[in-house]
Structure formats: C-alpha cells, structure tokens
Length: 341
Image (cartoon, rainbow, N blue to C red; front, side, top):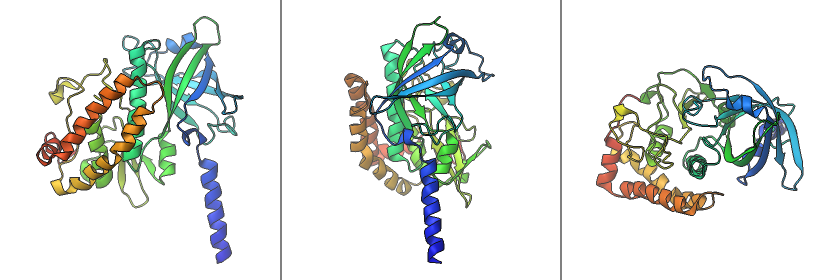
C-alpha cells in the first residue's frame, strides 16, 4: 500500500514536471527573433482565414547562448487584424511539441502573441505594456488566470523585402494549458448565465473588469472570457484581452454604444447583483493586493514612469470607491444583472 502511494506521488510529480512551462516561471523579459516572410504575414488581413506562415524562432538564454526551432505563425483577431486599425496583426504561435523539447517553450503547443498594433509608435508601445500589466494584476487577484511572459521581439523578413520590426510583445498561455494546470476542462458552449458559474470566481472576475474599466467582455457570448469546468461541474470564468480597458486607455478603443457611456475610462459594472455582505471578502482581496499590484506596475520594463503614475492614479480611484460603503454599493449595483451579460 505504501509502495503504491509513493509510486503514485512520483508519477504525479513527474507528470507535473513534464507539463510545467518554463516560459511562465519567470518575469524577466525575453529577447526573441522571429524570421518569416514578413511581408506576407503583414498582408494577411482576412479575419475569416487562419493561413499558416512558416517561421523560425530564436530566443536568448540567460547565459547569452541562443536556441532556435521551427514554428508556424497565424494572424489572428478581428479588429486589430484590419489594416485600417493596426499596421501589425496579433499572432498565434504554433509548434510541434518535439521541436520545442528542451527549450523554454517546452510544454506548450501554441501560444498567443499580443503584438504592438503600430510598431515604431511610442504611444502604442505603452498600450502593450499596459495590457501586460493588467494580465499580471489579474494573476495576483484571481485564483485562476492566464499567465504571460513579456518579450522584446525582432521580426526579420526572410525575403529581405521588409525592414526589421522591433517591439515589445507578450506571450499568453493557451487556454487548454490553463485548464490542465487547474485540473479543469475548457467549456466552449455559449449561453452561460451568472447562476451557472462559480460565485467566487465570477465576483472576482466581474470586479476586475470594473477595476480595469473594461466593458469589452461577455460570459454568455464567450467574448474575452474563457469558461472552464471542474470534475464536479463547477464552471469558472477566466478573463483575458484587456486592451480596451480604461486602465490601458488605447486611442483605438471605444465602448459599445448600447452601454451609454462616453469613453473607456468611465467605469461600468457588468457583473452579477450580489448582497453587499457578499462583496466584503472580495473588496478585502483587492485592498490586500494593492501594494503588490503597485509594485508590479513600477517594475514593468519599458513602461513610461508618467504612464505608471497616471495608471496607478486611475486604479486608486477604484480603491477609494470600494473603501467608501455608499460608493461601493453604488458601484456594484449600477449596471448589475441577475441573469448574465
């Protein structure tokens, strides 16, 4: 019996070790070069198609040596994939697990790359870093979350027809890897209502969207929300894509006209209606995490100090609100719903 328990523990540890992702174990930015037919990638603007583009990815190890392996790029997204909105599309990175073996990317099969919408534009560079910081803040606040890794990426044209594009970006963990990490299964069916979901995770996530002043999300439509189910049927909403939030304040972002708010920096709560008493532990979670989040913002490489100050001042308005009982009650009741969003 003891031997069986020990064997099970060893197998479990080996399994966890094999699936562990070194990419997300650290927050030190990576130096990455991606070589591909860059002109073809930049012209791939049909959001109904996901054309594969062969490429090679090289990253620098801590000791200064480099590792290269073959990958496939696919342009993704809708709004940012349109040329009138962005000069550089978001990218999905795919590779064979055997090609990534013994690399920092081992344990993954595909990853999103959140790219700079307009490389070379300093303001847009800050949007990437601001969204990255929100992912990190959500990771601090939410028990279940997507992990990220910041990178300075050089995109080099294999055909020699385009100049190098160099910009900040970040890798985002694949939803199936997130599910595996938390012993969950990705649920791809739309139409979920608030009463279908784990109450704690729903409250934390809904309040985070309010914290970030992000109204660009929907649980029932699975818009910028991933739903994951555990073995007993509990359903957990996990948020991603925060660039339309007021905490990023991107000039291309605008609220849905149906929400009756003028701009993205206007906070509007779009989560469930809950008794005030139920909010107290959630508010306490946010208040306790405030020093860590502020320290994280101040440590984001490349983020302009003036933008850090402006963003933290904006987030501090949220903290002042939840510290005031009357304002806190108004915040989570104005716009709340008993059904869903």
